[in-house]
Each structure stands twice: as structure tokens, then as C-alpha cells.
Amino acid sequence: MAEIFKGPHIGVLSSQFPSSLHPNLGLSVRERMFRVARRLPLFVVSPTPWVPLEDWIRQNLNPTLRPSMPGYEEQQGIPVWFPRFLTVPCPDLMRRLDGWTMAKGAYSRFAALHSAGRLGLIDAHGAYPDGYAGVLLGRWLGVPVTITLHGGELVCTEDSRLLMKLREALKGASRIFAVSETLRQFALELGAPDDRVEVVGNGVDAESFRPRDRNAARAALGISPTASVLVVSGSGQPSGEKDYSRVIEALPTLVERRPGLVCLLIGSDSLEKSGRARLEAQVERQGLKETVRFLDGLPPDKLSALLSAADLFVSAAHHEGPATALLEAMACGLPIVAFDAGGNRELVCRPEFGELVPLGDPSVLKTAIDQGLSRTWDRVAIRRYGETHHWDGRVNRLCRAFTEAVAERRA
Image (cartoon, rainbow, N blue to C red; front, side, top):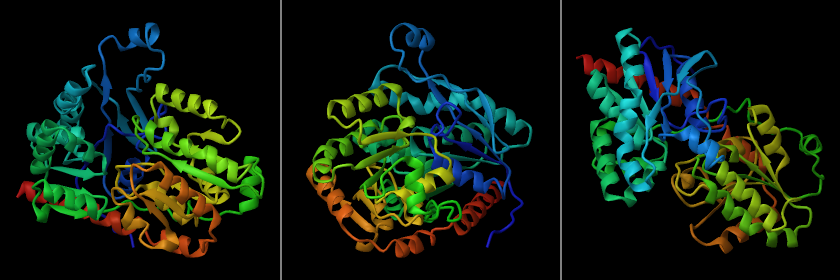
């Protein structure tokens, strides 16, 4: 049951947020927070990296460089700003400075809204650089900060200096939300206080994502009723090219065993243009142009129909928490093959829902997909499990925590 809250204005800080130019970027963040916006007033600031001479570089040296983001959009009645922040074109140095430059780039927007009485709390998504920037902004403006861990933080542990900034961000947050128990344990291992960390996973809209007529869905896509059909999703990040590439590598052998196999890649438009171009070249090089389709920017009803047309959902993401995409597929009755990473084990928790495979072994992934296509699944049971992950309880917990965090700061 949804609760009605009268509480503070929430400022969402997320560099991974959809726009008209990147419609599939950070969809789970928008789904989560726009549901909060039905209960609490909310706006979004999505800082985007900017390199000096970016326009000139795009025109003269690298036409595949990401397009500039819009300055402002209104999405479903919610204001969304896309301020730019300076980034240095040196991979190591860039990430170490991004937290500070992101905070500076977003400061004027947050300060203006704070002065207008429209900012009570900053909710940052991802501990670095967003969470680190959020903690700085909270300190400068005197408002509490919450951080939501989605799983991308794990790559920061590979650099000792980034790990230090990650610890600082978690230490400075009033509350930390982890989308899985795995990420909650990760935060505790980094020194986050136990009483400040809780699991609030993503949910699924079981009304929008439900099984549709399989034959009709296939007919609409021009797919044979007898073909084997995979739906493949990557990490949804601009750097997620390798996720899709792993599955494409496995396809030639699968096509030999299953002539007519169709592989539908969703969400790949969130990649940089250069990454998308390399995937398309890989598909052509491996002779898979008749097998692989890139499908982008699908609204829930069309995505639900596409999932209903498939035999198996393959999640190629290798470091995120349990993705919303998995829940959407399961709500449509689709079995899963995914890497045993992040919080995937918490969703694919029984063999009748799918199979998890270890990272780093392409042959195991190939075998799991082949076996998943051969097996008879109870899609009704999968659907029944998927729809238990509804949003209402999760959103109630978030709104309650936001309101408590602001009250504690005022006290």
C-alpha cells in the first residue's frame, strides 16, 4: 500500500540519467526516483563530463565523440538539469578529479534551488564520483546527503586513491541505500556504519511488464515462431561495450547448432558511438548480420512484447547490482542467464529461474545459453516470482528515510 508523505524537496544527483540524446542511460535511476516524486517534491541534476575544445574535437578529429547533452529537460513533469563539469582527457587523472569537478559544476544549480527553499536533501546515485560530489555539495550547502549503491562502485577498488575517495563519500553520507545485500556488505567492509546502511532494491512495474501473446509478439518483430530467440542486455553504461561483445563471441557456435537463431541486443544505444560502431563491426566480421539486431529506446509496452517473444534473457553485465532489466524479464516469465556478480544471486536464487555463470570463461557462458535454450521452463512460476518485487514497499522505505534524515539534521 502506497503511503502519502509530506516531506522535503529531494535533489537527485546522478551522472547516469536518461535524456533525449541518451534515452537508455540510467533508466533504473529514473524509474526509482520518479516513483519517489509521486510522494515527495523532487528535481534532478545530471552532471555531464566536458572536455575543453570538445566541439572542435568532434568536428575535426573524432566524430563518434559523445554528443553534448541538453542543458535542461522536463521529463514526466520533473525538472532535469544537465550542467557540465570539467574532465581531464587522461583516464587515471580524470577519475581522481571527477568528484570535485562534478561538485563544482553542479554547485550553482543546487545553490539556487537551496536559496529558493527547494532543497532539503541530496540523493546521489553511485558512490564515486556522484556520491563524493554529493557529500561535498551537502557540506557546502548544509543539507544531508544519501548515497545509493548500484554496483558500479566496485571498479573503484582497483585504484587505491579512488578507494580512499569512496570511503570518504560513504563516511560523509547520512544514509546509504544498497540495491542488494552484496553491496550492503561491500559498504560495511569499507567502514560504513551498520546503522546507516540498508538494502532497498529496485522493483518492477508488473502491470507494464507482463507476458504478452508470444506468436503475436514474434510476428510484430518478423521472427519465425520456431526460431530460438535471445534478448541480451549489457550494463547500460557508456563503457559497457565488453558486456555485449562477450555474448556476440559466443553466437557463431550457437547459430551452427540452432540455424535461424535471433539475438536482440537492447540498451546498446547507451554506449559511446565508437563502442557501438565496434560492436557492429564485430557482428559483421563474425558473419552475424542476419542473427543480431540492435533495438534501442524501447518504451515499456514494446519492451514487454519483445521479452515475451524471447526464449531466454542474457544479462552480460559483470559488476552491477541486481539490474532492473532482470526483474522486467522475469515479470514477463523469461528465464535468465547472468554472470554470478553483484547481487544477481539474490534474484536468480533458484535453478527454476535461470542459471548464473562464473566470470571470465566464455565457454561456460556459451554452454549456459545453449542449455537454457534447450530446457523447458515454467514461465508462469517465473512471472509469479518476478511480480513479487513490486515498487510500493521500496518507495515507502525511501521516502521515510529521506524524511528522517532531514529531521535528524534539523534536530
